[in-house]
Length: 128
Image (cartoon, rainbow, N blue to C red):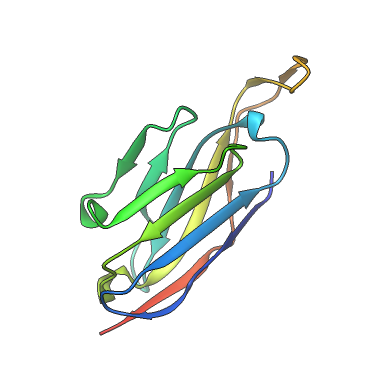
């Protein structure tokens, strides 16, 4: 599975951005997806996650401002970021974890080792 994140950029405080993460391969193989971020000099931290049945979880710092969602094919995740603050400045990484067992569209079962995959990251800069 390869993840391609996009949508980062420079925005003024109070503005909005929408990040996208596209995973290669079948969405049937992907379990949860999530967004993490890493600011300069800080550790990578969770921003938001979404499960295969669309249950979501958010870091307290972004609740009420960010929204995570998935595309219908389940191999794409989005992060709508509103009310951006300078402290949201970071490189944002997409993560996906795969299922140990999934089914192709024709019903064929596929067994694989569950793994976590990370995208390369997209830079979000919020100016004050």
